Length: 147
Length: 231
Image 1 (tube, helix red, strand yellow):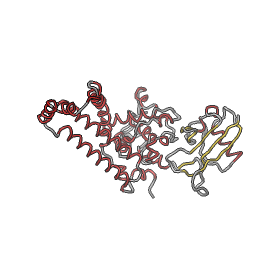
Image 2 (spheres, helix red, strand yellow; image 1 turned 60 degrees about the vertical axis):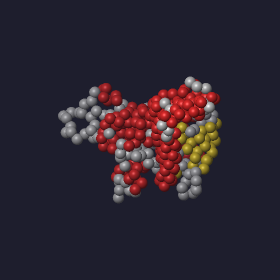
Image 3 (tube, chains in turn red, yellow; image 1 turned 90 degrees about the vertical axis):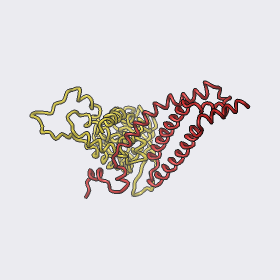
């Protein structure tokens, strides 16, 4: 008969074995959440400042956005914001799913939905930021300015 | 003073689900909740089931959810709760009867972290000495009485009973930070599991619930930082 201590340390089902799997990935995510959380403060407030305070938010139009996105610095800044916000947010939601969805099948399904939606949002974001070359964006802005 | 006590009761042989039992009785403001419960059991309804042993906050038997907070029934006075007292079993563990829950999953987690001194070196003549400074590092985590008030106040534990829980981490802390102990890496292996240390979301419920005032969340963070560099 299994003693209590061997019960605690020996997996009996696949789910047990999964729960007892020891890797340092969760440690890595824990560190990432702290570092990305710190980085997101200047990134998010910088974005907020650039779009709402440095410029009147009511007057933002395509020309302003296209002009901003034509600048490499803005592309890089916004790409970091997108990357860290998505990874930080998605990992936070993953934590919630793992904590609150009890059944393994449902947990897997919810995570797949999350990762799919997050993947689509991320790809769309990257496309918006990087799909057009600097020259084309510049041309678009100039064309708008000429109208 | 007259008080009203509501107790969540459940007898698996007779009830399909827990129900609330109401008791109105006389109590002194200086009575402890345990005195009130003893009065109910001895004078009103002998079928009421709960654990208690030392009745002085040391054995950790009578942790229960009193007015929404996990506490020891023997350490809370009626005067601090008022005229209405609501008592439930601690959450996240299977109810055996009334306020008695199955503590086995809790002790499984406790045993998993190897809560004993590990040192394979032959013992020196006399004692294995330690400086007062080294002893002070884990002083708080020696105070745990395994009442489960912390683990059963943890929202992660409520929904995911596989989570190793704050009590096990505190007891791992007690040995991980002991300068004479050599079992740190074995304990890290257990704590690094998917249902281990990293599931803590720093809700601080455990710290608030601890009847021994152990800074539990701080202990968890200390173990994490130690693991960060050594795991």
